[in-house]
Image 1 (cartoon, helix red, strand yellow):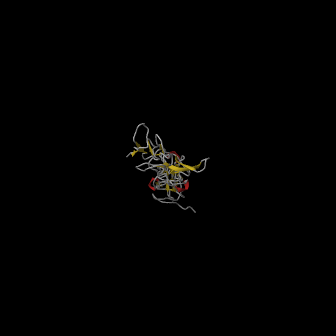
Image 2 (cartoon, helix red, strand yellow; image 1 turned 60 degrees about the horizontal axis):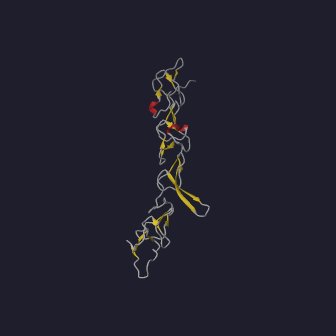
Image 3 (cartoon, one colour; image 1 turned 90 degrees about the vertical axis):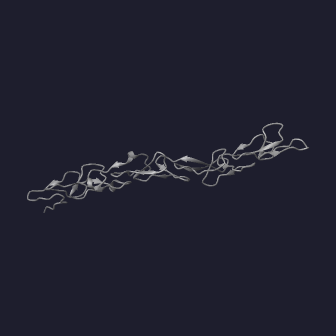
Length: 231
């Protein structure tokens, strides 16, 4: 589309929203989407500033501000929300008003598409490389760290305990082997990893890390016996 400038009065200025970079033309060109011109007689159009947009298919004299929760780079036709792993960072400027920019979440924090803030990963989890979600510590492990950044933060359940759940947030979340069972291994992920006391031995109390004790003189037990009371 062009605007005809032929007139018996001679040359005239291109209207706002249009431009003409060459001499001797009988028409003006409209600013394309993502650009604007608010002055008459211009030789070019100006890119929309950051955090503004222009999607008009014909001449445009100004760009519109992006709606809340969205922003744009310079010279864009649309505003977009921040991608996952970033948040909308709104800052005041010296001249007044604010600027909006998508900023990466800090280490150990994550966000989803369109987020206004980032969220720290809770104990028992850690941020993935893209900072888009928190991954859970696996079975047999735990972590009480807030905002963890790597799987290395997940610690093994101690000997005499186990955890069949993922995302355990404290050492106490690892279950003790039942009385009559024991385990000298760390990182057990199921109660079946706790060993039964063998015949003629007994295990008294939970969280046992050592083999079961031998029955005292005059006493005995079968395999799987939980504990022996000695009076």
